[in-house]
Length: 269
Image (cartoon, rainbow, N blue to C red):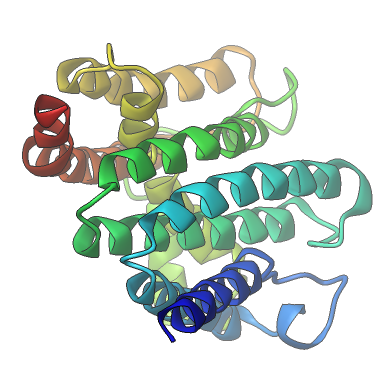
């Protein structure tokens, strides 16, 4: 009976995980995966969070399964995303559609991580390390496509606070049916550096909290500086504020984990 229940729990996780990972907002597809408007697109985020919270919670005692299945799946999905981005374009004909798919993937990963952090005790340290190491390839790819542009490619400069991507939030609140670019640009700039503390701590023990804090402070200036020097992309003071705000929030969460979970585990080992 116990074995059957465990198999059922794992099957639920696999189904919910794959469903969440392959959610899209594509103009190339229809039904659930198609472009059905901005409110419906945002509804998918809440659905993914709900489903993955449940799936991870019921597998809180199957930490070994989670620490093996999720990282391996992430590596495979990263390869699929890269192939789709450059070749197949099932996730959408334009850049923004493809980035929305990646956003769903990141939300799935973060939901598994947060739920695991709350409910899993035994084996948490190994799960933490495997989750974020496997996510590194996806994260590097996201940084490349979001910030590394060809010199001279569609350069936009905004040095007035509140007149760039922060203004997009005001536009979206005023009209939730407006272009799905608005919430993507605003919330995306907050989220883009939130994984950084966890990834750095997972890939190297030398990345102590002070080093991570310095890296998080410098990185937004580096990517915006690259775009400013080579006159490519959008250099926006709002982006720097949102980037650093997102990083700082996740850094605080990391410090809590470092003190109460990760550090204790390392000391015990």
